[in-house]
Length: 62
Image 1: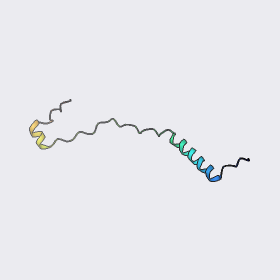
Image 2 (image 1 turned 90 degrees about the vertical axis):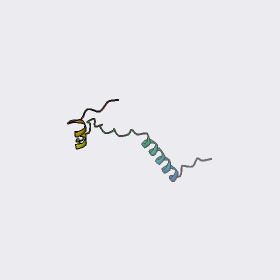
Image 3 (image 1 turned 60 degrees about the vertical axis):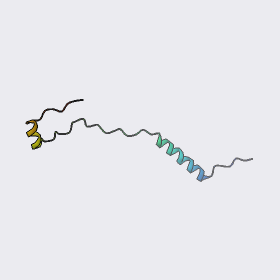
Image 4 (image 1 turned 30 degrees about the horizontal axis):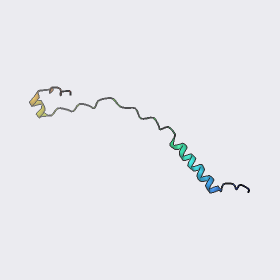
């Protein structure tokens, strides 16, 4: 019995599957740098300034 070569459609699909598997194993891009600066402070409204003075006391830290 003579072995038959793989049909071209099967060979292309196997090559595509191998390419997809290799692409799935590739490393992910580096994560963007984290911005550690705090957001700007909110301006105090008139009610807060009347109740607590200017500037109001610091919030408690839990």
